[in-house]
Image 1 (cartoon, rainbow, N blue to C red):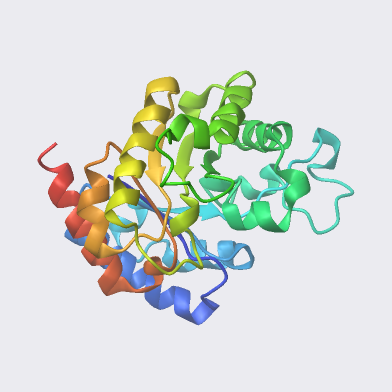
Image 2 (image 1 turned 180 degrees about the horizontal axis):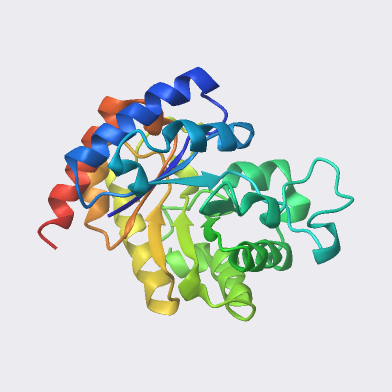
Amino acid sequence: MKYYLNLKLYPQASDLILLGQGYLQLLKQYPELELTVAPPVVWLASVGQAWRGQSSAHRRLHLMSQALDPLTEADQFGAATGAISAGQLAGLAQAVLIGHSESRARHPGQSQPERLGLAIRQALKAGLEPVYCLGEAKPPAWQRADFEPETHLYQQLNELEQLRNQIDLNQVVIAYEPIFAISGSNRSATPIESAYLAEVMTVMQRDFTAKAWLYGGSVKAAQAAELASTGIDGFLIGSASLKLAELTAIIQNAESVAAHQ
């Protein structure tokens, strides 16, 4: 299983030192485990320096940027005040989040497939692993007898189709963020939603290939094992990444399933 940890803007620099120590302990506990962590962008450089060399396990602790602005080649190192370019991230991170639900909500103008595709291409050119996020535009209508994941996910599947015409999706990690379980909902999936999640993953994996498929809802230890059995390759974990006991339980439960698949 793959684990990508989005710390959002919660931690301060001092918190990240302690979190890093906890992550390294997890890596020592699981010799095959790798963690990719996205601290607040302003702390990327200092976190990289602080975590590096604490133990040999740090080689399995990778950094991810929470942001990337799709820029022209001329603006990568030029007149783009306040932007974050792939070229500048290349020496700081190994991966980057693209199209996260919170970013889409704040910057709808950058959420068109062509803009997201540009960001992915620039990430790949800079040697960064793109972690591309998608999810429903509105909550599913469970009560409809003719309800099908393909119908409800049409916009997102169409978005993937457009991206496939621009990019080799085998180089892209895709994280599915179900609208009913993303940050702010503060709850896990119900049984009917879990069944829907399994169908969604089946549909997407049937019609598209990707480097890896992640579940990116509000991941809790209680449902990690069930989610791990739906055909996903790993998790994009949000606030639970800040609670080492909860994160450890998520990994334990998911790995117990992965070991028998």
